[in-house]
Image (cartoon, rainbow, N blue to C red; front, top):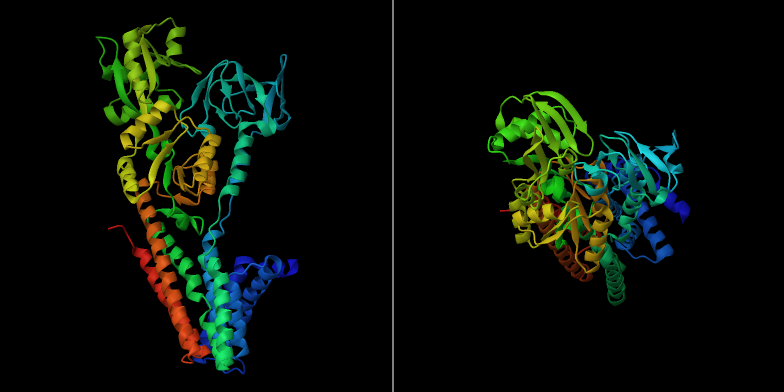
Length: 622
């Protein structure tokens, strides 16, 4: 059996394409008698397409007693050959292999996500032993080691900062694009990136226990609980085979005409039944492609049609993922909000921090005026910046920066800032010449179409859920604006995975929509995963079943509706093909059909299924 399987797999997709091309040409030559040869050219289709079907059916029956559609097809093939109907046998084999190829064409996609995650694993670490610094392989880091991490380096293990201040890009874990300020006592995770200041840390979780290794294992194992949809033709194959064999035997017994029994086996061959699903799927995939979707799994749309919850990550999915200044508040009578904004932009003009760049970008977009130049500039890792603008000393950063420089905020000042913090904003405080001057509030901005998308999804019948690594206040603020009732915030990758497992354990089918590396395990584990292909990470795209290449989330309701329309088309196809088969059987039992006419009848059914499926190519929601 092993040798047979090796023979069947030899040549791969290239062999399948070549076999289909040669078989199609042979059938055309046979049908129109184009070549003066002593044998029927349709034998080429029988050998190239039919033999693999018979062998696969034989292997399935012997090794697993697995009765699928290919068993009935094999019976029809052999019956046609025995009666000398070589063309009928060839076209049956060709159509069945074409259906299988259409289905496999969308399923066989290379998966590189695991490899890319492995590449995120730090290679080296700087171990401190007294005053000596040694570069060692990251795999050799031990729990309790004192490590130094310089700007731009990847954190080699999970641990706690002992000295130094910095900002760490934690997107790999939380999905948030803004770095988190860190100082002594704060925890850092392996795989995250140190951006500005250097720091010393004590390793607490190393090797296989580290965060990045846990992430890799999550992605590797996430597929285990995802059930693959079994083809409808295969689910019904056992009953079809039994019905066909019983009908053929009874007909032969009562009529004494073996040709009628053979005709029954031919017309019972489920060509249209097998084509019903892949033909509709291919047409729906073509439609989805026009709307900016790359469908990576053959049964992805079939699964999408069954979801009851559409789960969204926040940053980069419902929002643009880029912070913007939404308010400039002044504490000083002599300065208005615009002056505070201008001073902050001048102070941040030379900053490399993402928040500083966001202030600069927002100022250029809104004010359309020149930025005041900074005469002096100093970046303070984990705190903010210190500049001299227009002869005034400007401090711009977090509350700790002001406190460490002896600048106190009174209750009124803190109250104004707190109202923005509760909305999920990030606040940059400013002081002018050591006096509290005001603050800027920055927030990620909602996509313009997000509200309408959530409304349409709800109308279609799926419940929207917000599942994010962001702070609870920011998540609740966004959910409130969009009308999302179910919110889960501050989720690490394993938290998202756990929620999906629990949800699907309660018989809910979950569609996860995300864009970040931290979403990869959830995208892969969910019943169906959709990744933002334009701004999303490569790893997220590789883990998903569908990629939204255009990043236009307004297309998601169309995809959801398309999946449901596709399933209705498949059911219509199945009903028609079964009705046609039973009608043909009655005609075969009464002797009206012979094997050749029977083959033409069920091929006409296959053509009708393909035409009906083709309407999906241009379908759109009214």
